Image 1 (cartoon, rainbow, N blue to C red):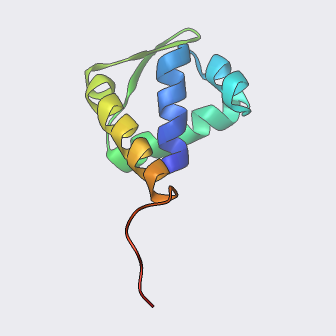
Image 2 (cartoon, rainbow, N blue to C red):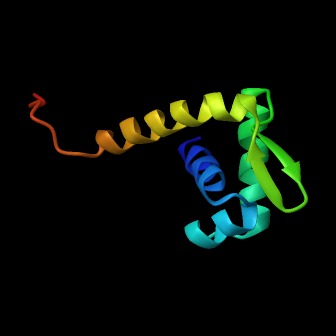
Image 3 (cartoon, rainbow, N blue to C red):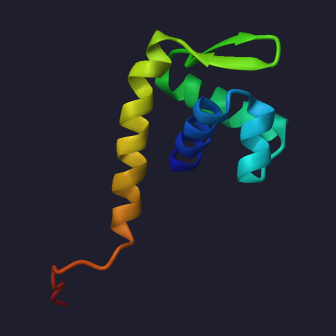
Length: 87
């Protein structure tokens, strides 16, 4: 789901599925599929879709901050830490 969350953040930032896809290296169709999977998993829509634009709806606005937090935490998993792991 991290991939879908990153795509969600990109669409939120760039305003359309096509623009987000251009920035993250995916087709508009792939972006649309990822957003659909994320919405299906969450059980609610994240965007109001009008024409080619995608505007965050109320649920999307609430979800965006959490998605950003989750992605930031995920990135930290791969960072070196001061914690020593004993085998």
